[in-house]
Image (cartoon, rainbow, N blue to C red; front, side, top):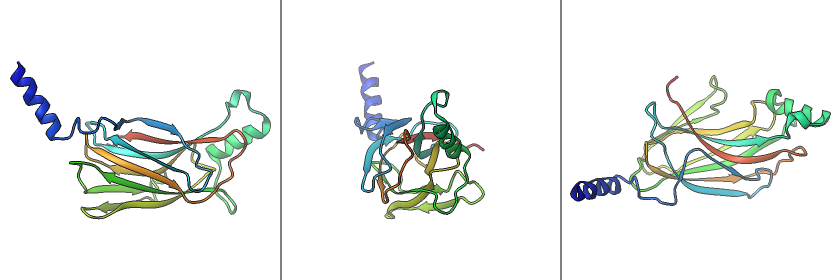
Length: 189
């Protein structure tokens, strides 16, 4: 029994399952102020085991006051965030996201941009030696409360480092705050 346990521990270490004790497990949601230029958030995480694939979604979460207790003005803001259409003068979140495979994780990664708009989405493929870095602009109004920065098809149970940097200031309506979220998504459509 001791021998079997030591072999199992050796295998998990070899394949990187226990290599990053500081790596967070998905889902992750952390308050981050995306309204201030220069704000940076970075963390290490482990891609989850998912039978349908390990498609990971990186989002800006936009949180509004509770609609049950909102004033008329706050109610309008909530409706615009959910159902609005970007127009001239619409505030946009402009962020740079960098994804770095750690340890034994594969460098061959498919990234999907504009993933909330499936008709106009762009797919990019990165291979060994290429820097996985994208600059994305996302409208504050429209599309609901999760603004998808990008989706990435990652290797299951491998560790990655993600860094998000705010490139421009944006004025948020009163009572609205933001977070950075990492969630799993099914690649079975």
